[in-house]
Length: 303
Image 1 (tube, rainbow, N blue to C red):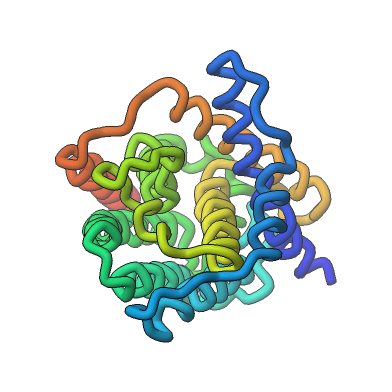
Image 2 (cartoon, helix red, strand yellow):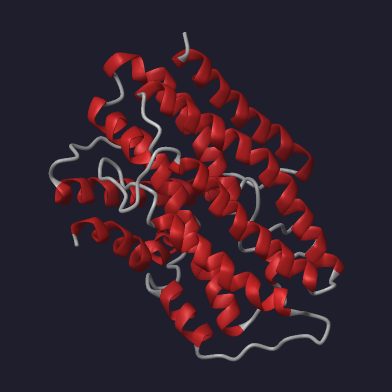
C-alpha cells in the first residue's frame, strides 16, 4: 500500500498545484483570487454537464480526451517521487514516460484536427512543432542524469541524486544545467508563460487552449484533469533532480516532496506574474537553448 501512496497523492492533489499558481498570480497582482478549491469545483461542474458533438467529428474526437487522460495516469505510476521509487520501475522507464506523454499529445492533437476547424488545426500544428523541440531536450537531460548516476531507471536515478545531494561528486554544475533545461520543458509542455498563456482566449496567440475550444462537459473535464496530472508528472521529474531525500523514511520524503512541488507551483506563478509570453518566433530559440543546456550537462558527466 505504501508504494501506492504517492500515486494516490498525485491523483488527488494535482489540481491543487493549479490553485497555488493562480493564488500566487493573484497575490502578485494585488487581488484576492479564486478559492483554493476552484479547480476541483470546475471539474465537478464539467462532469455534471453533457457534451455536444459536431456532425463533422468522428470517434477520434471522442477518444482524444479519454486516451490522453489514460496515458497521463499511467505516467503517474512510473514516475518516482523524490527518493521514493515508483510503483512500476524498470530500466529504461524514462523512454516509456516520453512515449506516454507523446501518445497523450498525439490523440489530443488528432481530436483537434478532427473538428475540421482551421483555428484548432493551427493550435495543433504549433503544439506538434514545439513538442518536437522539447522532447530531445527531455531525453538528453534524462540521459545526463542516467550517465551521472549509472542507473537506467528513473527511480534509481533520482534516488541517487537525492541521497548524494547537490554538492557531492561535483553534482552542482550538472544539476543546475539539468534543472534549467527541465524547467523550460516543464513550462513548455504545460503551456505556461513564457511559452503559452493558459488564460488567454485569443485564437491567433493560443497554442494549447485553441485545441480544446470544441470540447465540453466530461471531455473537457478529462482534458483539464489530464493537464493537471501532466503538471504534476513533469514537476516530479524536475523535483527528482533537485530535492534532497533519504529514501528510507517515506513520510519525511513525502513532506519534502510536497514542499518542493508547492515551491515549484509558486515559482511558476512568479514567472507568469513577472514576464509576458515570448513571441512565437522566439520559442524555437528557447527550446533549442534548453537542449543546449542538457547537452552541456551530458558532456560534463561524460568527461
